[in-house]
Image (cartoon, rainbow, N blue to C red; front, side):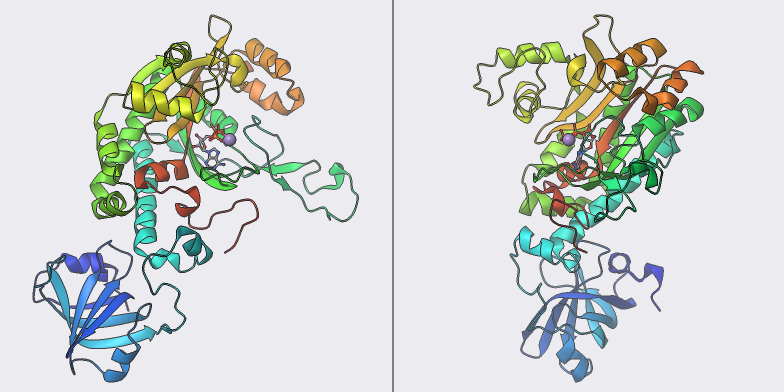
Length: 456
Ligand code: ATP
Ligand code: MN
């Protein structure tokens, strides 16, 4: 019934005089003497198709039901639009209503709903301007991520969502169990014979694949049971984790920079009207920041240099800085927004504040870690060169008090054909916040899962 090229986006590309069938949902309707205007949207473009209905042109019964929220098909001819804001409009000769929407109860009637209210109607918010733009950008971003890696010969790998090792301690984990919570039981009686969890990262398994396919990446869901009700944390989010053999921290840094610029440029090229909307209605620095980031060479400082800069800033930090302390959001934003005014990659952090798998430097105190900091958001990517030396890794696992028996296979990778390798992780929703200027991470994922909330 609906040709794939029959979208409103495709209709905008057709010459004046073409007869078309347009399908979609009515955003708004305006009536004046003997003429009706309908803004029609089918999600294919930010821009609505304006439909003009002259008196008597379409069946009266259908016209009566063609109110905000209704799903309709309009047939007619594309004509030049005298109105501002669009170059063509559709002059209707027929109208059919697939699904009416009662104007008395349809929740998206008026403009200016709060984000909180829209979250409660996640089944309908996708039809609004804001969420239309958000999810078109999310689609383009996901495609750009695959395109970037595929063009460079990276192999896409699916790492497990259910795991029995508590990985790297990246965050609190959700237990996966078939045991009856009401009855006392042994872990050994559980489905997997021992406690199992939802994965907080796919990195360790991605390393297995990098040591066979050289360059790989993951792109999948990740779960963290962190009971932190912040605008930047979800219990279920999507993560991208490239992992490269024969790659040191410098190579990792270069790839992260190239990657961020590529995906930003792709979205700038393919989602202009959506980004212009965010720039106008959500955050008026979005476009300028993205264009600046896509064009500037990233800065590079070591953690030690970064701490020196923060110490001599003369600021009154909420979290005081000294060598050995982790950088907080306020420090990260100061470096990227005020000192360098562009993205900064900070490397070589103290071993104590970073994960066990990061490669120890010659100084014996710092590890080959890197964080990419970006204006307006702070840390956007975290990564490292991995410890590829068996003895060093074992020592670190012991020093951090991790259960050695859980890391047998991970250590094996260092016994059999080990190689220098590196990788990083990017949270898809954090990137989405960066691209759109949306302030709450719950508004850049279709169905947010947060403490106390898993609707839809
Ligand atoms: P944060 O300090 O912000 O909690 P993290 O240090 O726990 O982040 P990593 O373990 O390095 O983050 O995870 C890799 C990436 O995943 C982060 O850079 C971030 O983009 C994203 N991320 C981490 N936790 C969450 C979360 N709860 N919700 C959404 N994205 C997240
Ligand atoms: Mn965290």
